[in-house]
View 1 (cartoon, helix red, strand yellow):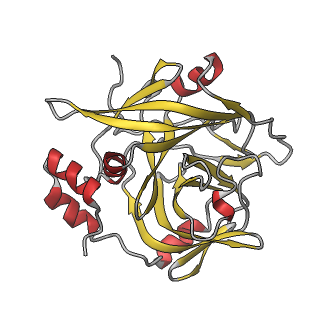
View 2 (cartoon, rainbow, N blue to C red):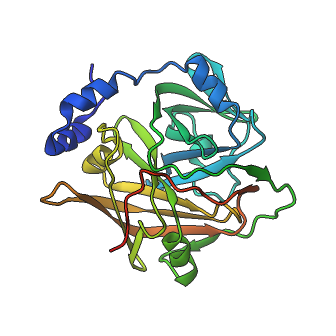
Length: 295
């Protein structure tokens, strides 16, 4: 059975990479291998994406803890011993049995990332996910950050719901070298990473962003999901202050004659939380794969 749904197949065929995608797709499976389990236990940050069961809006949220708070508790199960705060837009989804969730653990220190998607089960300390797809990605577009320190006395600010981007939020987006993209389809959810030199995400208006879709692994999971269902959630974070900006809305992909791709995102809601995460990362060493973003 194919690991790809019709949306991903449509984009693969449009770009002409179906054979390559089939080769890469052999790495997808439900098993958490020992090397993946070891990687998870070292991480202080996990990004989770899902659709809110009440509103249908798609969000991406960051969950943090002392390394070991995320771990494999079986060959096909990942457990997380905390969750987002009650005001987080994914708080309801992450306490609802059977929610389809996508997750990504990204380690800037090693430029490694791992994705695990499946079905959620609430637990007394957080939640567990029965894995359906587990896979690693190449280090492309990951900005290296050598150190990460916990700031236990950092007090999170009050989350601010917004309908559009103001000057402060637009500045955070314009300065970003990394963000996370949550998408959904009828069979599940997915979270991917996007990286580039600051300025690769462009604020077109208070309600619109766009960014170039750089060449990747040819699976086209995110763009395939968007081809079938345009709902999406974005997470931007300030790696120094811990401030987060969560956006929800819809996205569409434009395909240029020369093979270039641009994703246009329309904002329908946002949550801006100062000092949300108790982590401080060092300054980035930008990925050698980052294209020149001067326009």
